Image (cartoon, rainbow over all chains, first blue to last red):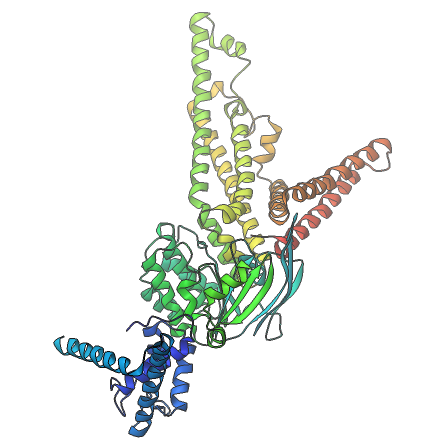
Length: 128
Length: 226
Length: 272
């Protein structure tokens, strides 16, 4: 796993986002243990205190739970994961709309092109 | 907290090599001293260690003048060439009461150093690794790293940079000088910019990204090109 | 104390091979020179006897008498001069090596836990140990040379001399007397400390200021010395023994001053 960081946005937010994505797509499953902070730091080549900050944030958003002396686990609560999923969707759409809006293309045209591109992407994944 | 207050130094006719330099290095953070070449970055580290005398200034750790809580990792070979890596480690261990032999042995493994290799025969990168290993094995809360990645080939650089994301960093207050920021940009917590022996800017790197959408390099350009 | 022994041990280890090879070289030259002198004398003697048809007695007379042991060890003084030169060079090298050598060991030395004076003491001890070694080896060499001389030269050609012939300087150096040995070591200590002072001054200040400081320290030694001599010459207040006492006291005070200065420079002024 190698993350190419955008040096212009906070590193811990990028790692947080990356982590949420893993949970939402089920790479880290409900109730499953996740890598330790140390393992995460050396895997992503980030400072251990950044990893610490990310885990703390994930705990605050209740996406992971940490008990004493046991590796942290992904939450069992599906509704929290669903909420994260919606948040990711909203963020992605917001970004997308930002860039579309900037070049002033009508919604209908956007939707047609969107569906076309989405299907090409999906097919290429199935082929692979 | 390592506190540097009012460092001043002139070298003969070269006035103000350091001109009232004050800053702090907190624990559990990586603070980076940035400057173009010859801005006195190294001199600051050496002054903290008492390796160059200063005209004025104080260095304190948690309010006390202590020297045994800081380890310095210079950017040139410092162990006698006739020693082997293993001998150099054994030698240093005998002098430092808090020496952590486990760290020394682990790092020797991670850095792929052979105990029997003569220091004189090591590459520049491997000599840098020996210095770094000794610095971490001293087991002191503060570490000063002088250009840890300068002039080292790519693969060795990766091996060395690995330590910055390892658990050996945990809890440590690290002050590092560099003029090539790119490799370590995402690891740095705080940046101190130096020019003509004076601190001209201090930034929290995550804050800079969050509030201004600027990378450390962007900031560096701004600071030095105006 | 542990640090002192460790540092001294390391310093000795670092230079031991070089030291041993220089020492061996000097001893070989010395022993060879004795053999050469004896054989040369004998061949000259034979030549004279053959060419000038002289009796052995007459030939010996022509060669200014029998070969004394002092004549046989004529080269020793040069070897000793070389030894002293090497010692002084080494007193410089033992410091500069750590600054200018392939590895900048001075970083490690200056950062070691504990007092920096230990570094100074260990280097001083190392040079003195080497000086003692040199003296010891010279003693042994002179004894071997004596045996060689007695063995190679027919008894009637040997001059009845003390162990070392006439040279006063050699007698002083090859003394088996405790006080003389002590004086030589004290002298060595003084010279080495002086060299250390030069090095540490040079490492502490910019070129111009360093030269000035060194000149001042040398003047502090020489000027009072000359002044004392004049004073003693002009007036006759003190008998010679008392004069020697005054000189020695002065040197002792000066030695304390330069030692103190070395420590102060090492603690607060040296720069890497």
